[in-house]
Image 1 (cartoon, helix red, strand yellow):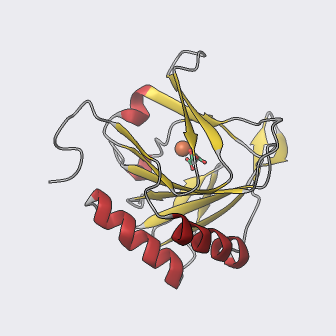
Image 2: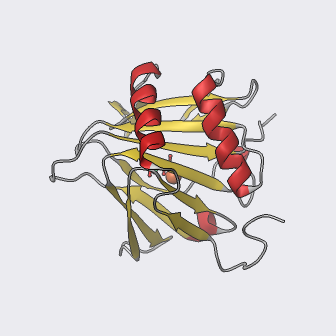
Length: 196
Ligand SMILES: O=C(O)CCC(=O)C(=O)O
Ligand SMILES: [Fe+2]
């Protein structure tokens, strides 16, 4: 049984302090130092723009993943990312074969409204996201509505788990902010089923 079998309405869980501060500090410093960041370009109305954040995709061999319009071959798990994956898998009780790292360097970096509904994630994907570093606001709105329905502050060491049909009915974003904020890392663990 997994965490989510108990209550089908319990689609979203926010766990501040999921990992202790000293461990979170160690993970943040190591990941900032060792990750080969990329800033892919996306095409919008015929023009290319760099995404407003840095990213890296790690996973099992073959766990190709499409984001920002491009299919990405995974980098092999590092010792540290394998350690973090093991802790997250043990917590959610499901295998996770890839992780997308997002680096928000400051308040100008962001992620626009979207659902994590790529075909290779399957119908009702479990998305488990670990936040490290500066606190940023995470907003949710219903598909088809522009009003923000919920906002969460994702703090250093917190875990956010989105399960079940969340991605069908909700979109999420991390908006730009004028407030000064420290660099933030977000690791979203996923189970990817490569497409033929
Ligand atoms: O940075 C976050 O908290 C959200 C990341 C996200 O939505 C994603 O990687 O799909
Ligand atoms: Fe997302």
